[in-house]
Structures are given as structure tokens and as C-alpha cells.
Length: 260
Image (cartoon, rainbow, N blue to C red; front, side):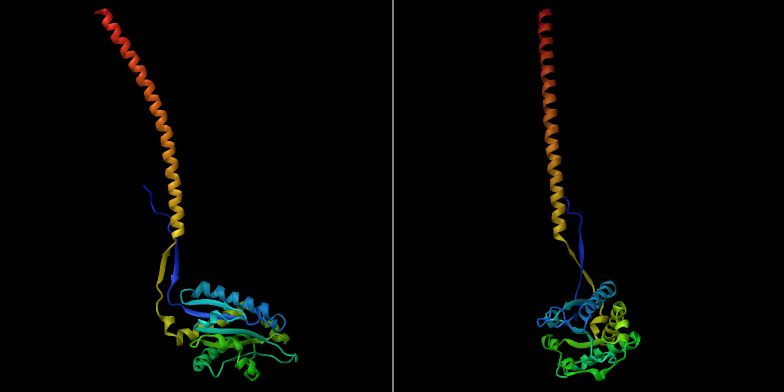
């Protein structure tokens, strides 16, 4: 009898909060890769954030990534554009957060941005420099492609043309850890979905089931083939024995008749 076995379960968490992290310099159609080293450093920060979320917050947060072409941000609950600043003046330092005043979620945007800033700048040792905000940051192009209800912000994490900031910002794991702390702190306080228990939904891996059934079928076919071989051998042996017994019986009958 065939048995379904070797179940494989994939855990799907329902109604997680969708967070998109963007590296706006990656795959930029105009070739703008930002300040020297910025593009690759942001990639490292993103993957460090992913590692933290996968390990500690996978049941609450669904992380996605956007490059210069905003796609996931159109469906995200939260969107953060990561950048590092740069200037020709080597004394120019610090970082900042910025939000679009025309956003449908502008109040939430600023609450989100301020919380992240509070958890990031002082602990990171990067000067908070809101005076460095510009029209390019306030009206950041990526904001035009996010969802209508997406809470969004841009953060300049430090200035890579400043030796002090550049040295500190090489610790991308610390950047990721502080950003995650700010994000989670905001969600815990402001987003009721974060505190709602998430029930994992197991889904059966039907491919694993099918593979198991195929293996069981092949095993059964082999056992049946082996049985046929053994049966044929047994039948041949019994037939030979029957013929021998029949010959002996006939001989005995003849001998008895001869005595009578």
C-alpha cells in the first residue's frame, strides 16, 4: 500500500508589514552611482538589515528591495531610501532625514523619519545635520513611485567625503542594527499590526509529496518484479517436483498390479 510521507512545510506569515529598502544609485539609468563607494556600501547595509530581519523579525516584517527603479515600494507599507552624502568641502559632515511635504502620509512620514533619526545618528556618532536638506532630498524622485499610503523617508547616513564620517560608516553592520532598532521602535508604538499575533500557516510541499510517491511506486514496482521472478522459480520447482512424484506414483501402481 502506498503511503504519503516526507511532508515538507513552508511557513507563511500572514499580514506582515511590508518594508522596502531602496538603493537609488543601483542600476540608475543615468549612470549616477553617487559618492565614491556609496553604491556598494548601501548594498552591504541592505543585506545586513535583511540578515537581522530574517533572524529576528521575519514573522512581523516582510522585507523587499528596490534599486533605482521603484517597484516594490509601490506596494510597501514603509519605504526607506538609503543614501550617503558627499561634498567638495572635506569639512562638510553629518547626515539627515527628509520627507515630501506633499505626501498623503506626510505626518506619519515625519514621525517615522524622526524615530529612525533618534535611534541612528547619536548612537552611530554621525552629526545630525538637517540644514543639509535640499530640494533633491525633500522631493526625492522615488517618492513619486511609492504607494499612496506608503509611509516614506530618505536618510543620508553620513558624508563619505568627510574622513570622520567615512571611517565610522564602514561599520555597515552597526548602521543596519541601529536602523532596525529605529524601524521596530516606530512600528511597536505606531503600527497596531506589529503587536497583533501572527499565526504561521503551514503549507504542504506537494512536490515533496509527489517525489515521495514516485519513490514508493518505484520501490513497489521493483518488489513486484522480484516477486514475479521468485514466483516463476518456485512454480518451476514445484512443477518439477510434481512431475517426479507423478512418475514415482505411476511406477508404484505398475509394481502393485504386477504382484496381483
